[in-house]
Image (cartoon, rainbow, N blue to C red; front, side):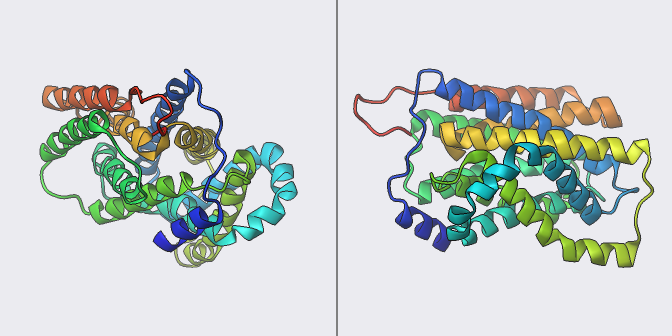
Length: 316
């Protein structure tokens, strides 16, 4: 991944970004929050479908539905940008592998044995990895952002510490967190000539194609699942809302505020997942967990806020 980051930066050393306005940080935080809240439902659906839809088939049909949802907006633009997409083919392939093919499949695999709230807690490690990747790329985090990151991280650590034992699906979720952090860091290096909608549609196409062989293997070994409202409706949710809508909002957030600040907002995910799993799946949430959620929220507010920079200084 480091080699791809280096080549992308070298081929486009001064990418053109949208002009920053006074509302850009606020819009970026709102987009990151929207994606985070919508994605929280994905953990609940992964857990809810664990005994009816195999993990690979869950991921595959999610992206097929997402492709159908995004095609009216992105297919024509992707065709028009086919030349730059080919030029940056390795970058597009890696982003599609990490963010589309691998990430959600790993989450669904973890959902076979791991409660949704615990999945959200483990996934909350990804903002730390995002910050590490951005720092390695030369981005200065600043004292306020670093403090917010640490406060939110402490809340997640206390939240996870209340559970008994490490879940069997924990390694799958750790791998998913690494994939998502790598995906988010790579988004910051997206070549400026690749339009957002065309890029999003192309990653969906490539990710779905990458899933085809494992989808065929899953059908041959596990068989298919029976379409019913209890399976189709959750798949429509993850395909339209958690894929088309949330990925567009997240990509926009990265462009506006960067992976580190968006990652701090992402710390809201274990809070949202815990509340949703309690409301939908009946997973218990006690007062100690609510106190940890408040600590996470405080860290998000502290670290995601904009900070003043010297006139003429670089934007962070």
